[in-house]
Image (cartoon, rainbow, N blue to C red; front, top):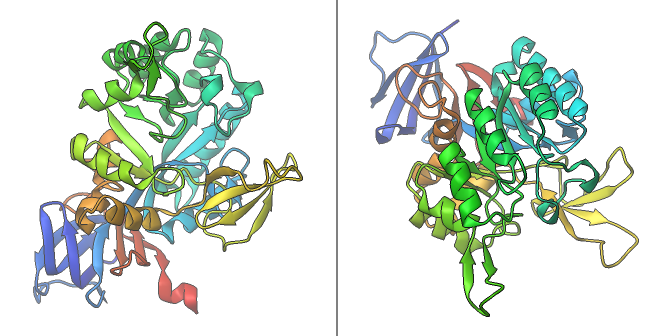
Length: 406
């Protein structure tokens, strides 16, 4: 593999920003980072990024799909196509998210995604699988079909852990469900991250799960009910899951990078109250992501949705339903641009939410998530508006804007 040198850029290195810098890539890893021009001894393919930002590639740890690809229904070829689509938006790792379905269907798609990860030339863009449901609170199910929801039982959990446990990296569940504490322990034994979500848990239920190893929250402020009124004392509020996850610093929190799903003040609030390495931005994207406003898509069950300003809305003959929010269609670069604005963060600090922070939560911070000598060359080049120009995955070009424009 030929060495690659990215030069004449603003480098967002792990140790700080280099205003006029370069990185050198050898054998898929970063071999040098510096200021000015590379030494005359450096050899390889030189790419002048013309003053643009050289950033770590983004990690989307919660995404259901992109363009016309849904990870719950996709074929090998469609999954592979989706990975190249993610790269267009600076993403170098995804955790492919599967939603509530029969356990057999979740296992089947988990095996397919594992196959793509192992065999595709771009398979290393997949970190693994996120199982979101079916162990969710019915009242907080959001877009998950009620008919699939259930409490965790030994047969179902063992089916997932024994058949696809090696590729499953995160599991979202409601900690108030029966057997949820047992589920937390089983996931921990397998090295899978237990994640709160679609829940109305009490403080005590959440605290017990955190003590058992739960370490992350799926799309905070969406389908997570934080406080309740005390039934015995009018206007007295009882602490819930939100209080627990804000109190315990070991728990990271993800927000969807969309002002419709998450009102703007929450971005600034989470940035202030959580440790710097426990704040994460995700897309929670569905089919339609990356498509123009007005695009209409039809699911296999006949439901129709349309794309509007980074979200999906329902098409229905019932005026009370038509136009209702049904999911996200935001891309990671746009999510990060919004985060920087809403939370009033510098660009390097905002990018942490989509790079080293998810890498840390996922336990892969030693190999990716930041620009540091020895790490994989998972790199994106972007302009000041977060528009992506170039994406490298382990040193290989997987997206180049000029080539797409031709």
